[in-house]
Length: 391
Image (cartoon, rainbow, N blue to C red; front, side, top):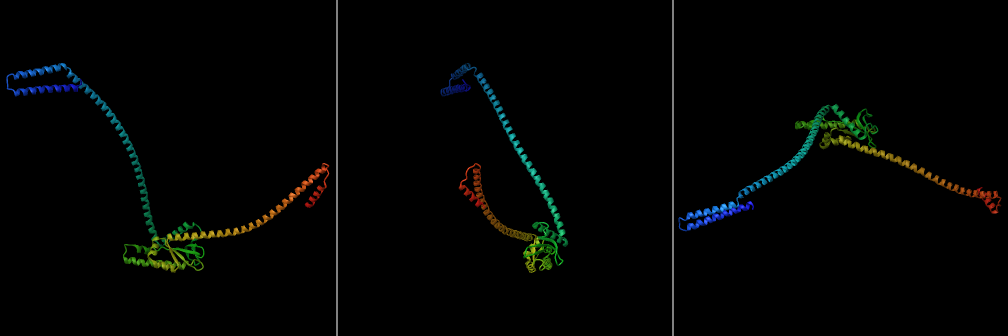
């Protein structure tokens, strides 16, 4: 019998006792009160007590059984709880270890990535620092260049150096057959560069001019409109003077080309002339003086280089053609002589075959004579015929 069953039995007995007591009380209340009520109540109480004693006697060890059962259940529950706690603790430890490993991996990867990023940042900062130093140096160089360009003589030297670099970049250094620098002409003038262009152009003179002072004033926004307008007029006058000077000095009939080039070593000044100063461009055309910037002069030199290469190629092609004509004539003579040689070889071969036949016949006759054999008249005739043929 289980504990649950015993508990239910006690509950049922208690319920039945209460129901009997309630029924008795109801019956007594419905009847007239007498003095016999108390003895009956005593009797019922005594019966209940006997019934309870009998039940306790029958189930005297119920309390002990229930206590032992509860103790066993408690011990078992404690063991289960301890086992569950150990298992839970083990599971938690494993989960914590797994989480620690994952966190370590993530932290390691994050630290590695952070270290890489930090190194990249340091590298870029070093590059930025180097670039900053280059910019500072460039600023210093620009200031130095401005100081250089403030002087007319140094401006002229700057243009000559840039002109030389363009020629060297296109044709190479030291090419007197193509160009010459600082060449003295027949009129005792010294030109910055002379280009030995192919006919019909001839020797093209190129001189560097740098009209900078009035150009700066013309472009200075801090000056008044009147001052800038005055500088504009002076700038036009400067350029015209340079054009006149080049046309007078570097265009010599029957010596140089009928035109010359004015090299302007600043793209900004050249752009100003071509975009806003159309009169200057027309004035240069009238004087046969063409203006060029570093970019346009590079294009002109490149075109001349292509033309020179084409001329060289054509010259070599003409020489090759002449050699081919001579070779064709020699080959015709060779073919004629070879045909004549083949004919002679055929004759010699035919004669050699006939001589070989005669030799065989003579050998046969000698063998017969050596053996004491008689010689037929036919053989004599053949021998004589062969001898005559050989003669």
